[in-house]
Image 1 (cartoon, helix red, strand yellow):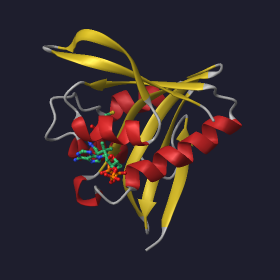
Image 2 (image 1 turned 90 degrees about the vertical axis):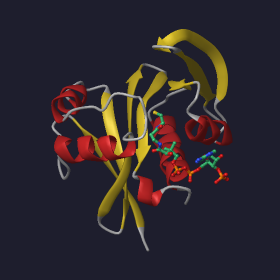
Image 3 (image 1 turned 135 degrees about the vertical axis):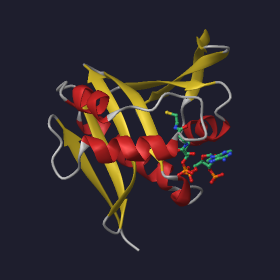
Image 4 (image 1 turned 180 degrees about the vertical axis):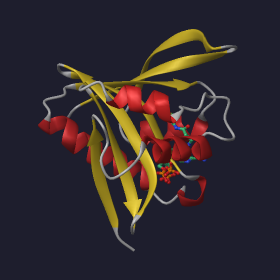
Length: 153
Ligand SMILES: CC(C)(COP(=O)(O)OP(=O)(O)OC[C@H]1O[C@@H](n2cnc3c(N)ncnc32)[C@H](O)[C@@H]1OP(=O)(O)O)[C@@H](O)C(=O)NCCC(=O)NCCS
């Protein structure tokens, strides 16, 4: 089994916004979070500061990470892995690959927001050296958002 990563920005080549939206929908199907439509993904990627990285198993894209950069600050907008490919270290792999890329891009700190009840995601980020630095009360309706931060090594 081989793994690879591919990077997309602007008008994504090699993958469609429809495919990314499908991965997003399937990944968030059991969650209360909003699924991004192809149009929303296209519009995000048209911003030159926003990019997406897929993780592929053999030829199939099984998840992706989308982020934006403002000078030395990065923000993870979403990270998702298809349900059938979870609990195999895929999210940690793509996160570690992202750290390498962010370092090359001179990012110093990475932030993200996560629902306070998203146990798998909080576990993933803590395992990969993110720390909780704040909380937005009722950001997701009746649930808070935790603000997490990673300082580049
Ligand atoms: C969160 C998500 C990306 C994790 O993907 P994954 O490939 O299964 O994660 P990994 O296998 O790399 O797991 C890495 C670590 O995360 C934590 N983790 C992952 N799944 C977990 C679960 N169900 N319960 C508790 N901790 C979990 C563990 O610390 C794990 O390390 P371990 O295997 O040594 O215990 C995946 O569950 C997902 O796509 N969820 C829906 C989308 C989402 O919520 N995204 C994050 C918000 S933007």
